[in-house]
Length: 307
Image 1 (cartoon, rainbow, N blue to C red):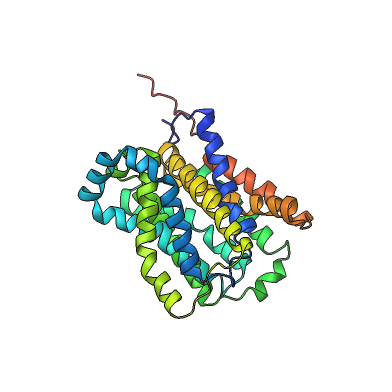
Image 2: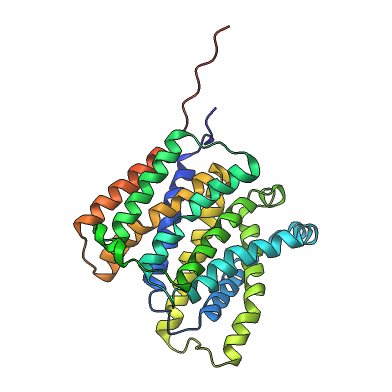
């Protein structure tokens, strides 16, 4: 039987939209670093998301209250991992490392997902999935290194890179926890609203610390526009699509959407930021897309044993 369940075209659309929405951080978040304190940025991002989606939570208030009461630990851990570590902690790490390093390191989250599933659940990785992931990772490397293998000699790592690696592991654990029976039983939008609220709660203390100690706050129309874009696309749309993808395809396949983020980011930078499309971009995109297609292809039904 295929590891990837039968999916509707709509499910595949959301699968492809996930890296697009996550990549909007390139457009709206590029100017955030250095203009707004990192944990303040993350707090405003998730508090705003929670406020927007509150009507869906209120409509299912009895179900939501029951979920929080029965699964308070799960609720807070999901918010801490998915919105705290993968939010403010990432913004902080980006003040210490380059976007290229962060891109390459963060894509390893899909590897950690499969590794954790193997360690905790005994999940077996099929050959096509493994080869596809290697090809996709090679494509990401081509893009990040700009097609220059010698660039590896100058590819230095620092504490910011370690922070991104921590976030990659945190996102892998977050992805697996979304498959918890209690989380799976919740409708997607109310669940996402609860997680956004949880994220805002865990981010409030470090954000308050930044404000008290003179951390930068949004003070211009440009700052608020970027925050609005992050809330609408990189938060609400991206995490809803990712949550749906985890539910339909499982965390391992959903994690592969991370490999699509560098190509999507490049195309968006060319279209919206006027950056130049280079030959190594094309090579990397072909490798990434080919690897993702190979890794997500349903396993052929084994030929039944003839009796």
